[in-house]
Image 1 (spheres, rainbow, N blue to C red):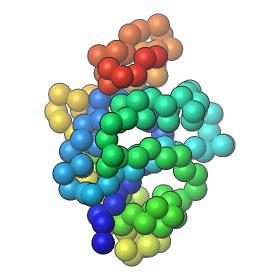
Image 2: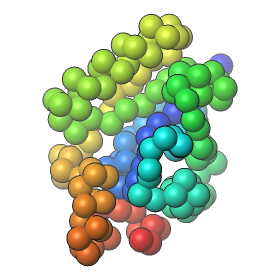
Image 3: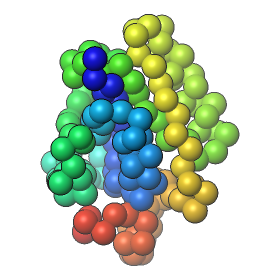
Image 4: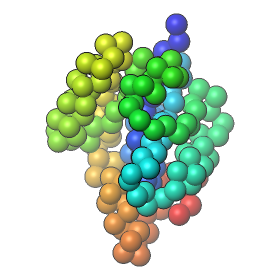
Length: 152
């Protein structure tokens, strides 16, 4: 059985912190699926099409990574793509508390799904998509916080 993991998120935008989580997950799994969430009830700052393109550009030569759009419950998407693992990045203890609750609920919904936490490197732990969007809204430059393949 292949070890397939998904790394779900809105990735609005995809940051160096996100990239570090994916890169650190790669040695652990045969395949990592970056699952870009599309919530029609949520007004995203960047379109789903743009977010998918950015992440595909970052990982275009990586056969063990795929980028896919999804809606609905993450555990249902896991079933669809035959993944038994969910990868989540942790920046600090607040992230852990929040992510632990979600992981426990996912386990209740599907006992076969295991959540794997990956600690973000300290030099990237201050980066969040929310902060990056705020910088953009105020005319700032976020190029040092996102992969070089992404142009905003």
